[in-house]
Length: 501
Ligand code: HEM
Ligand SMILES: *[C@@H]1O[C@H](CO)[C@@H](O)[C@H](O)[C@H]1NC(C)=O
Image 1: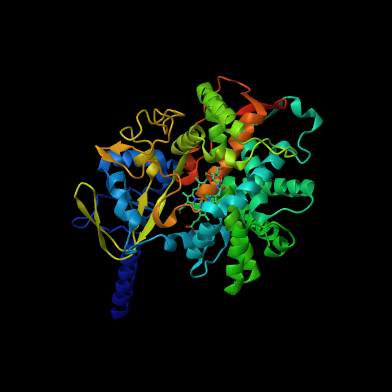
Image 2: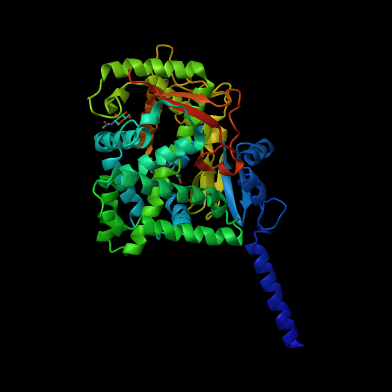
């Protein structure tokens, strides 16, 4: 009898414990944001969220307002939708919202890379040295060389170059940017043809991984896909191995610096390979898709294309070429190109949709711009999705779904930086790069690369859509929250080398 009682007791405790783990008993406490646990235990709203994050968050905002906590796969996420209240979250002077903790887990799962202490700081200091300001000079030049190698070919112009070629625009752009970016950062050899072939092969594998990526992060892969991801991970570790890298010259200072740090901290070679894979992913996963959207918008908006070609003629007139170079301009052409800058900013406003996540480190108060205060719970995650709350806010950007190439230009043609919400000047009026602790350290290189690519394409080629009436395809809904979005399908286009002017 006593034994039975004991067993029942244990069973009861175990069940209650389990249900607590499932988050079933969590109640909204005084001062906490509205809590929406969803109808499925533990999973909460995960299914709707993963299916289409943008639509899901729109619904939640309508239901709960600017702050709310939702359950997603056993974890609680507090979304803050009012951009005027982002300041304290992004500044986080006391380090009570932890970015690194979240990132470490993700990086281990996706790339197999086990972060060394100080690694986040190291990446940012390497980037401050080699991806920004004067340090960017070398990479700028290398990038222009690689882009013209990839686009115009090793011998500059092949005989059939002046015929029309047809391709998928997404595939063409991603392929070009990936190869140029990879060769510029990870190094080249003397054999250009061989380099191009190797980069091409790497890109084919990269695309496979990229397609599985969102569902991999959400742990939604089927058994065969799991095996495939494992195979791809191992392949990348091999193809990017540090050993292999040493045989190349021209590995960028950025990567050389980071690998040296890892070696000095006793990181095993196999782990360095995984680091390389992570770096390949963050440096190549966004720029290609962004260049696709930019060119597509230009093809759909002749007034924008005209404005850029006029600007290009003007700036290139001032920065004429060295003979013998395959493309006919220098990087300095881009020091003053406000129309191109505006096109890039508008493209990223419409198509870059990152999520910013911070783990709540100790119970704390969140102060909103309105003066309201909310209690945040230790261990929860604070999340921002600026695409919905900033990029698509009609008060900040009137007619927010329309592409306006001059949205970021003042009437006098200079760069526009003043945007307002509720009568207040807004600091973060677009956030394609994230912000605060986790801001993208490659953003200057990414912009440079994108601008060089667009300029090369529009000045060296005639471009047209195979079907001029084809609409801009919708965003693949799985891609919300992962940086630059992808289209739900590709768009056919034609290109032809222009006769030299
Ligand atoms: C259009 C192109 C790009 C976009 C939209 C973009 C966007 C972003 C965003 C939103 C993050 C922050 C992620 C987070 O908060 O968790 C990030 C991180 C990062 N990006 Fe980019 N990125 C781009 C291109 C690049 C390029 C070209 C490089 C390097 C050459 C680069 C290097 C990095 C690195 C190293 C991180 C991780 C930083 C850290 O650990 O804090 N990105 N990027
Ligand atoms: C690198 O290129 C970009 C544009 O492509 C330009 O804005 C930037 O000033 C350049 N940086 C250096 C150091 O040349």
